[in-house]
Image 1 (tube, one colour):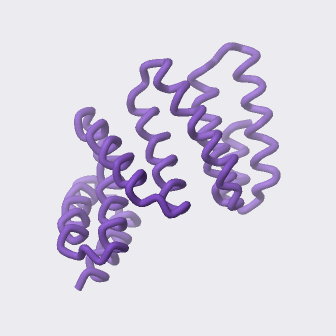
Image 2 (cartoon, one colour):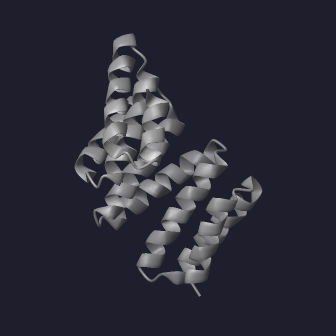
Length: 168
């Protein structure tokens, strides 16, 4: 159900995605799989975000983060934190978003999660760019690009390079 819900989101069928992910949540609760529940809450949040239902998206992501912390899964909690930061940023709270991205970056860096570390740096760069702090943004984008190059993640690397170009 969860995978099908993700595929429905990727296909743009958000209502179906929500329904499938909510069904997955019920099943995870019934069998007592809190880890699965935390993942499904994060996926539900991403779908609600795409539907522009930011309140419910934030609520779901906060639940996912709380559950991840209770399970002592810091990486999953940090991924949820990134989602909360994106919602905070979209709601115009750049200070809270930047603080959240910095916290998540520290966790990703300490745990060797290079892909998420690069994303956190890129998000921080975007915040600095929106404040017209181009030198700080460029520094963060370049740090992110080095990590993306190591990962050979061409899609994300292209995005970071575009962000670098926007600083010139």
